[in-house]
Image (cartoon, rainbow, N blue to C red; front, side, top):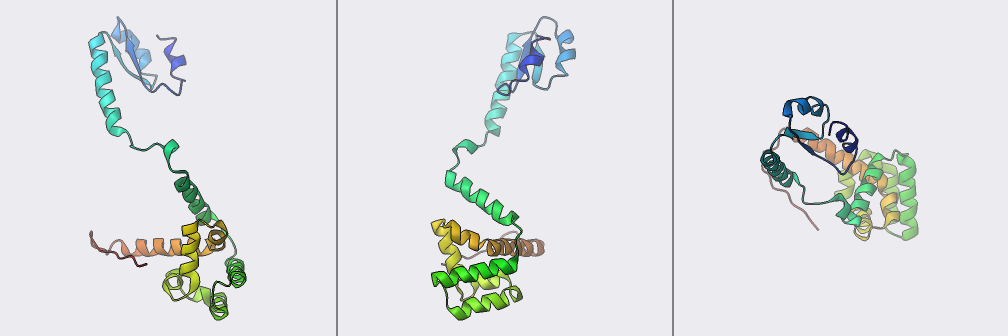
Length: 186
């Protein structure tokens, strides 16, 4: 066992090793150096009891989902979100691209598009999102339909909105009661 177990411990499928032997004290010395060895035993009943306890612990620690079985759409949206939040682009250029896209799609009144081009930085992302402008409707349409063109055009805004909400949360979390009510509008 002393020569075979170091080779066996390299197998990624193997998580635990239990050693059954005649001389427990001799084998415990080398077994302590191998992390996968859970114990050295001289009786089969002792190993069975250790296995039973470890099986119960494993069952309690199991997470009821497998990353291999996650909905592909969920995984895709998580990856897209992470990518959007990590992108560092030129805001002025992004605003111009969004404005041009909206003009081509006829998504909003020309005055509203011009206002966003001129005044985007003078207001918070939440102000733009909750205001009577096309931002809310075009963003929700893009997310609902998983329209990557719209999502990418709105990427800078999604990032700004996310960062602003995160900032507000950090500022307000200390003063908030443990329970509070939130509302969602449609």
